[in-house]
Amino acid sequence: MIRNKLLIAFDGTNATGKTTLIYSVASRLKEQGINCEVLIEPARNSPTADAILLYNQGSFDMPAQLELFAMHIVQCVRATKNGTLIISDRTPISTMAYNDMLIINRTKHEENLIDVAESFTNIWTAYYDIIFYCQDYFASTQDDDKIRRGDDDFQRILDTKTRQLYEKADANLIYIPKGLSLNDRTDFVLSELKKSHNC
Image (cartoon, rainbow, N blue to C red; front, top):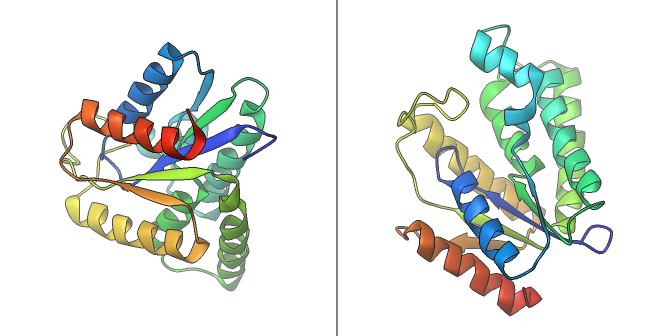
């Protein structure tokens, strides 16, 4: 919990249907009278990420990654003003996984920053009451969305790294079964929320 508000998140590699599922879950919860605050993935709301991904202006470096890392935390804290249940699209752990993929030739300073950020992330993760992990892989080139686009090898490697980081953080992680329809995935999430938090 964060400031006495329930905080849940959805994670998994890119193009797994996280955002679609989040809005489906939020819609159903709102129908039940539960006030939800949905936080979009920081990369979708970042001028820095837009410049890199959409306009080929530079590349992801440590300052760009730190912006996304910080936005995860800031969004969660700010959301406590409104919702009784906060739903986050990803967590800082996903940013840490991307660090491993995007920042290859690191300076000593960057290594130190990543070590500190990972330690902080492992502690911060305790604020999430549940993290639902989407396991399905969908075609990463299925549309023209440059933020989600990527090759399938990248997708698999990122998935492995993200799972490893969650294990180190000792997160309350619930894996969503593979192969479910959107409606069934939504039902699964709502069932887990009802069991653990009576939502």
